Image 1 (cartoon, rainbow, N blue to C red):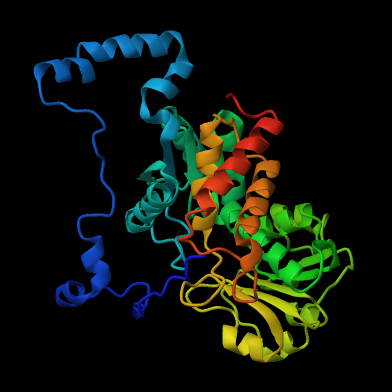
Image 2 (cartoon, one colour):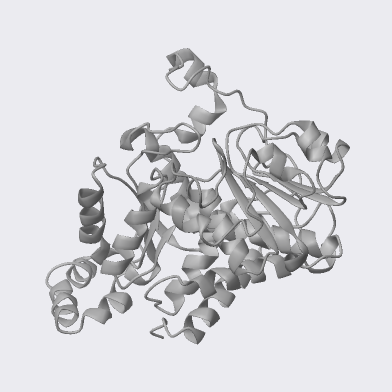
Length: 409
């Protein structure tokens, strides 16, 4: 297996509003890499002669347009639609920076497009929309959709993101995938499967506590429950989510009805006592004493970036057997790039009309299986550079789409 990425140590900005001077930007390798953008459009056909021009553009192109008008599915065969995704954001929840707006979000969307191409061979176009009204956002995405074979929603604030995804998917017959939710969930479940296997347990044996009830926290928790976890409770800033609380939004209220079978209340730290698994998807911190209170062979996924909820060395010293983070400079990086390129590659290969729960579970199982005999406490998830990942995920997703009746090929 390819070794984990060794990342350079880069300084963080002094504050979200801090703007480095021109001299500082010129000396910074991050700014140097981003100058001029990270992606471009490249021609796939020559336009060197009059004949080339007449075939690629007018008058020849009109014949293709007329054929597509009469038979719309031909757009998949005679345009880029079958291999191109729109990466769409409104800039309201970008990385850990928050609501920084669509222009400031563009470097992240470009990066996402770059990863789609690099790891999945999927074309992607970054689209940053200057609209935050939910109805207008949904309508704008739907109106953009005819040019694309899939929609990857990115960095849209919770709980709006749940409604945006539902409504856009209801109106389109192409895959709509909110990566902050489902990409994280796919990779996290894959790592958890292997961590359970390594420690001699099944998913059904595990009690999980999740810190963070935003988009990622709820999506990860739903998928873990769907996969057959023994018991799971999720906590927000006010403590464990349970049905008796009167301060829950609609998403948390719905989730409370399907989780926390033990009816736990109180704080996240209290719930960790005796738990097998900690999944961190918040910006908070976890006291070392809380990790020490977990069951033997504890599993700690501390995925806050850039600072994990608990440092891996501290978690190991406190008794955790397996530790994963979202960072590239520690083992077991839970990175969404392990999921979304293969998910879209597989879904679009069979012209799936949506990404179902079964397709997500299949992606997670395939990702876990890539580790194989290399399974260890330092390797419960493949490297982002492992060339087996995207093909394995794509094949599993395509097969699941056919099995679930959402494939058109």
